[in-house]
Image (cartoon, rainbow, N blue to C red; front, side):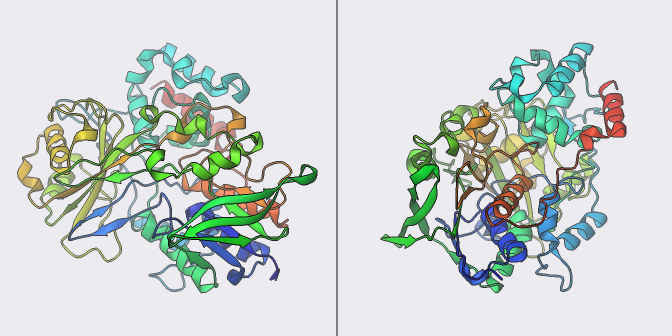
Length: 523
């Protein structure tokens, strides 16, 4: 065991938690030598789940999972014990849950007349197919900083495929063509079943309870120290002789300035940027307040480190245009089954088997999903929770004459019931908590390759970057896998672990997958 090396994690998201686990499991670092500093009161970063049945549960969102991809995530969670099933790993627990609750959406798209749209055909013209092929075969150097709209005609964005793909992954037409292309390749297997979401897997509860809590519990058992309410304000660097070495961390803890000295052979993992930075919650009576990085200071440290150091990336490529990177979500807590009963009858899906229901003609491009219940650990009998979001929160609603961003929870429920033609009485016990997220798809913004640092930047001796804003070839952001893969790469490289990072499964190289995708495109 490499007991002399100390490791410091700046940020307590899934990337840092995963990095700590890989250090213990694969690099022989003693858990007691690992410290995680987190500015908030909870670990998990964007994998959150909060609230209670009395004041209402809250979820900013959840990342899509598959078992056909996510090689590093499952490599990690095969080692983490379940909190509820002794003798089982989190992976085994999740796999068994999905065997019992298989996805097959029967109401993926709903039109303005409340009819379920026939989604067996993608709705492509020959021009759409040729443009999509051209984009998917272009190399990333050719795509550069272009947007999806630079490659696809306006009619493409009214196809059934776009409505399903965009709402499944939260793409906007103005987002990065490179990221869109990476998704087409990484999830080519999902292209053939995008209308049923049959490839989508789910955790037993929300991802905080199912991933973060057992991982944190295991880390604490290994002696890892997790320090909450502690903001790292500076990473002090020695840049002599062309090599970058962290020498100290400066932080504010309980309003007290502190400094920790870092030895040259110690390791620092920095989570640069956050998709959920500056998020704000509303209530049944009030809309979420409008915040930005000016109020949160969540991007300050990355901006400070990157100034004059191009190898550390360019945060301005991601955080400079909130109108292009934001949307709003909402979490609804119910004390009776009236809404779930009607929704299950309408969709044909039992809760937990249907996935997103998207109202394609909604001005907000609103979607909702009914998860398997309970969705929170400890959720009482008789309480039900569902989640929804709108990709266009700046637009006036169809049934509420104001933008989604300006709506309180009661108004969002009114808009939802309007699209479903449900009587508002089904929401009699509902508590809807809206959430505004100004940077939620900031990692999809058009960017150059150099705008994202490598997990271990060139000439870095002991500093690594782990987040949705690092450069990992062939993988896709806005996934748990991206953070976990970056963490595994960083740990293995810095600590010279003699084990291979699980490679990205090249489903897009399979002749069968390619042929099936081609057949699907021509339906």
